[in-house]
Length: 504
Image 1 (cartoon, helix red, strand yellow):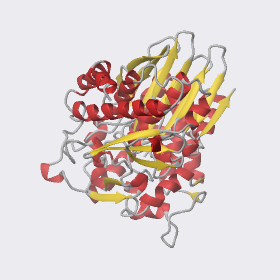
Image 2 (cartoon, rainbow, N blue to C red):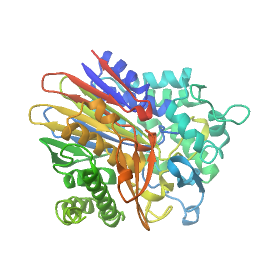
Image 3 (cartoon, rainbow, N blue to C red):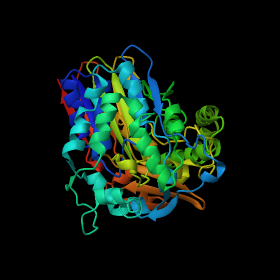
């Protein structure tokens, strides 16, 4: 049996379909993620990055880093710095970011999936793309998360590129309503080429040529040399022990994994029974000191692995002392053999660019201000960008295994943190743990703000605060657990209209 959970409603069923046709947990997770990259326009796309965490039953977990890189190989200096459109949109209370052709980084999703599939999957590459190709060819209904995001981003992000705008708006210029049929011109052909030729179709083939030429014409800086040089990287995960579980999460360049691990260390033994006022104060303080220290230690692109270790070391020491003193999609899958796979993919907020008739929306990762501390186009070509993605796998000595992750930009580590604490420490059933209210601390220049969902008594605290109903702003956790007796628990986040499936 194979259990699949995803923050995309159509992805879990696609993963289960691959499982029923001979695939293992890795195949199921990858196929589901590919479907989400097709059917969640605005939220994610094939033109983004990915982290794939895989844990074979009798081996150490491994992280496949397919995140976005800084492009620009072979370009004269005067080409850099352009192709940008600075925007502000009301999503999540207000977001400033940069879109446009120059915001597109070298995408790594397909390279990471190629490595994961060839090393750990069972079905061939072409079959992996079957469900995604069908949706691209026949169309799909606009999902609730896409609709919710396009309300804010339809004009600012997707309004400057005519093919991109036309795909998401009706003839009168209104954003497509929820459930409206969507069929993106050129996407099925691009997926067919990638399925037939492999990832090389993008990294040096005709699909890549169309992407590069289309972006260059509009002012982008991605080159064929960037695509040809791109390689997914195998990395050893970060590990932290929690309540008898060994939790493996993403190392640098994912700041999200380091932040998650540090907060788990700081919250050892807490909450004891639930989120009363004192426990909430501790949760808020843990997030505050980690996010403040993270910005100091991990803000630079130099020595990132060293700085991540410093963050975890500080969590054991100076941060603990301080504590005592006062657009992304995720899919998780586990099979009965204990093989676990946790996949998070992201295209940032989206650049709005759909170049060369490919039907593939490209990322805006170069324009994500919070992940580019050194400035727009300031990095050397080939530098892997920071990320908040943190696909995570936990194992216990008795054979239990848990795959978990979430979309949600800077809220990714706190979404996973809360779900883990509700489940592993407060012993809530997995779905209830994912459903339960969340809290995220935003560190601002003049203090901090606590964003939280109804159900937590933050209003009893003397802090700047912003209360939400249950909101996709707080992520979209997808989790699967296999217990020692062979039973599965599955959970998908209602905040993102997620779904689960169990395949025999």
